Each structure stands twice: as C-alpha cells, then as structure tokens.
Image (cartoon, rainbow, N blue to C red):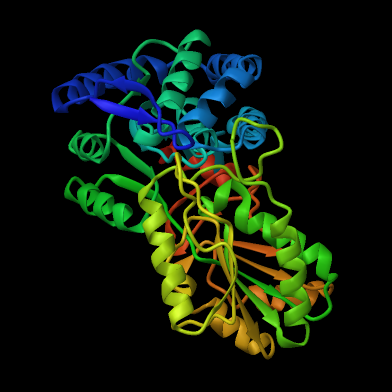
Length: 455
C-alpha cells in the first residue's frame, strides 16, 4: 500500500494500492493491443483528443493545483503556473507534430525514389518525476500519444494523485481505453515495469537511478532516454546591473524550493563586484516568504522528501567546516512539515560538497573568480552538463564563454528556463536523448527508409 503524505503538514492524504508485477504485465498487454488500433487513427483525430485534454486541464486547473500543492508542497501560485504553462506546451505539440512526422522524399530520379516515413515506437514506458509532474510528464506522454504510441505512465510515488488526475482527464477527453495505463508504486514498481517488453523507456530523475534504468534497458536493447539532474552554474560579470542579476539568480536558485534539475546551484562572480553582488542577492532572498504552500503569498514551501533535509544539512556543515561563510539559513525548521531555511553560502570553493554534488533544495554557494578563464574552468568542473548561464551586457562575451561549456542549454542574462520550441537535453551525467522541440517529437517515432524503384 502506497501512503501519500502532505510534506507541509505530514498528514496522510491517501493510501493507494500499488501495482504488482502481474498487474503491470496485464496493463502492458492491454496497452500493446490498444496501440495497434491507435496507430491506424489519423493524426487529426489524435490531436482532437489531446486538444480536449488541454481544455479539461484549464477547466480543472484550480483543483489540480490544489492536489499538486498538497502532495508535493509546491506553492499554490507555482502549481497554478505549471498547469497553465503546460497548456502552452500542448499548443506546441498540437501545432508542430504533423510537420515533424511528415514523410519526406529525399531523392528522385527517373526510376528511383528515396523517401523517409515515420512510424510509432509502439509501447512506451514513461517513468516520470515529482518536481514538475505536468511539465516533465507531458513532455513525454503527449508527443508519444500524438505519434501513435501507447503509454505505461508511472508517476513518482510523491506525485501519484496528480498522476491519477492526468489519467482521469485523458479518459474524459476521449482517449481510447488501454492507451494510457497508470502504473502506481515506488521504486520496486518501477523496476517491475522495466521487465516488460516495451519499445522505449523515458525516465526523468536522478543520475543514479538513470544508470540502473539504462542497464536494465540494455538487456533487451530497448531505446532509452534519460532526463537526469544537474549542477547548473551561472557566471556574473563585472558589467551587470547588480540588482537585476541578483534578483534573476535568486529566483533561479530558489524557485520551487530549488527542486529543479535546472535550478541554479553554483554562482561565480567577478571579484570586483563580489561583495555588492552577494549583498544584493541576500536582500532578494530575505524577501522570500517561507511557509504554508496553500497561501498565495508563499514563495517557498516544504521540501517534498524528508530525506533531503539530511542531504542539505550535510552539505552545509561540510562547507562551513572547510571555510565557507553561512550568510543565512542553514537548517531544517522544527515542527510539522519538511521545511528548510533558504540558505546562502559565500567564500565557497570546489573542495566543498555543495559545489560538486547536486543539492536539489534551497541552498546556493557563491564563489569569487578572477576572470572569464577561471569562471569557465570552474563552471566546467562537473560531470553534469544540463545548463549554464552568463550575466553580462556583452552578448558576444557571453556566447564565447558558453560555447566552451558542454551543456545542453545555454543562457544569456536568464536562467532556469525551458521552452517547448527548443530541445531539452543534457550532456554527461545529465542524461541521454532529448524532449521538446520538433526533435523531441521525433524521439517517439522511428524512421523507415523507402527505396522505390520502378520496374
């Protein structure tokens, strides 16, 4: 039995039966059969159903936001924003799937035509995340369904109620039975799901779990796509407007309580402006309100997982012992809920865990650098490669710096940003494959090469 706990109050929200191996196998077989018929339907018909799903999300936005806030602790204004912005992502998929999957004639001569067509993968396993369940889930299951696949959707055990809401709305939208199968459970359930003969595995989560999934997929040579974590750096040059840069980076570090794979986790600042930047950054952080996530004026709610309190505490203690200055925060808040003070550390360096290991919480280290060369060296000193940002008035300077960094997304004067028009991918420990953009749509289809010679 899976117990759903409110991380803000520690009250039990629900207890839900988990899927065992037998139930998962039955759902997989049902989905496989349903997919064959779905693949024969027109894209226009699929788009109509997903369009109705989009409408239902908007109609029930408040109820879904309340559920999301209750089970993961996301502040209610951020929960509403996530669901509203999911509609924009669905707009992109609805408008661009046809073009992305249109057959293309690439060569013709009097007796020979060469053509590329796109076919669905078949049955897709989507093991999703809790921090942005509407975003990271719909990045996979929406283009998968539009491309003609069936989906075995396993939400994180920390976002199960949201997963149920998604399944309900898809059913109400008219999606044929069997095509979207909800798989309920924790990591053991996910492991059982990987034993099924699926045609693609799409996972969002930690690097450690991603490696285990890749190993499991290799047994059957199943296509695997991994959206993993990051240790995302930002560099602040001496020519910036301090208040603007500090406000942007504080938001990027602490939005969703820092529980984002692309949250800013390391900041490097030109030594000429180091002290005034830190002061401006602290001023912004002191303005954040930590508390009840159901209130509209709350900026930071609880951590979703209680175990992360110990992870953050260890990182902070290690940093202070190695010479960092604790400027604010630094510990869990006593009482009900998994709350943790927003924490800022200065005078950090790369001997400290907080500058090396993923934090995934409201903790940031700020390090001074002498010049662009040192900034590039330190920003690249990580096995992760998700995002990096540069703050400067000089566009060409920013581009020159960002070109040297092995990351999937590069930011100039912004951070913690995702666009459906651009591919979302990582290098190194940050993952394999990509979602979003027309490239992300094609991730759920496979090309067929046609050699057509007339007799």
